[in-house]
Amino acid sequence: MSAAGDRQGRGRRIILWRHGQTSWNVERRFQGSTDVELTEAGLAQARRAARLLASLKPDAIVASDLRRAADTAAELAALTGLEVTHDEGLRETYAGVWQGLTHEEIIARHGEEYAAWKRGEPVRRGGGELETEVADRAAPVVLRHAEKLPEDGTLVVVSHGGTIRTTIGRLLALEAHHWESLGGLSNCCWSVLGAGARGWRLLEHNAGTLPEPVLGDDD
Image (tube, rainbow, N blue to C red; front, side, top):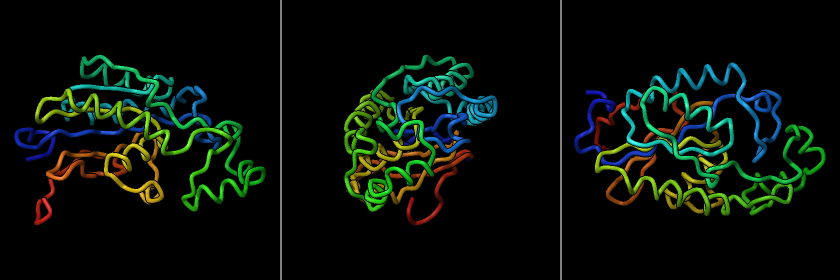
């Protein structure tokens, strides 16, 4: 039996879904809290992913209020009939003067700051937020909505790559300098957390297909 059909006894589940492609993604520009729209390709990604996620019969959808996330969430809402709750706490990291710069421009202008961030040091990229501050505002939003789920319910959180990574790190109780080890999410891919005996567990990461049950000794 697929995970989509087996709800009984599964426990609560959180699906953290990154928005579809934007023009700044293609240009490798740091978006941060800049409100950039989806491209046509991004909308197509959202529609494809929404068809898959709708089959999991989610109970609630919460999304960042930035357009790229809100428009991605709207595709799932249209299929499920659920209303989307928008929360600015799920926005991407504010990164000050980095926002709008390409990857190469950031390295050229802020190379030492970039290198320190990659080493896992607490850095206010571009004078913006610390990663821990992003987790401080985003993780409580996710937990608040997860607590409202039925016992075997599913919450879909539509947000941004950096915010999702820091939120996962916080919910898994990982130390902040280990969050980078989670890796990034591709556009319109998602990660899945499940409620376990000792807290939240990472069940899927950067997935674009439906979750499958774990059959083995680690179930």
